[in-house]
Amino acid sequence: WLEQQLPHISAPGSGLRLTNQRKSQIGTHLTYQQVYKGYPVYRSAVKLNLSSEGTVLSLFHKTLDPDAITLGDAVRTPPELPLTGFEGTIQKEQVIFKQDQAPRLALKTTLHKVETGLHKQVIYSAAGDTLYQADLNRYLGMRADTMAQAMVYLPNPLVTAREDYGKPYWN
Image 1 (spheres, rainbow, N blue to C red):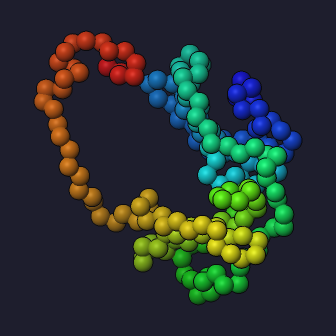
Image 2: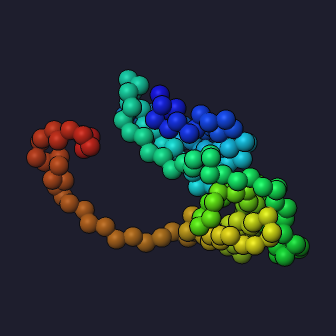
């Protein structure tokens, strides 16, 4: 069924890798990442939600057409990377990256150093140029509790009405 909805994922060299599977009261939630010739496609995703009976509730995707991908040469660690003497965790992975140009092979480098709060991701081209940078602190860098303001409705208007509103409101 998924290949009928997204025909380019069944093209030669293209496919999906299951990255997350979760069960809930509603059903099963599957998340996939697109791969092409063994390389993950950066920021690609397919999210499939199934009911408990196995029917499709929703399908969302952000995938690339494999015909547009140019692999080129493997990307080596650029010499100007500030990794010499770095004492944190360094993860490197060849990925297919697309931003303003055609999708191509790139090097994703992720740096983590908890003591200093450094959580950074950098994408490099084969020539060593920086294609993209992301500060991952908004996901990984919180060391203390955060404060949030919210309004609480007492009594809850959906509960006190004693009505069954159906989807997407679950009682």
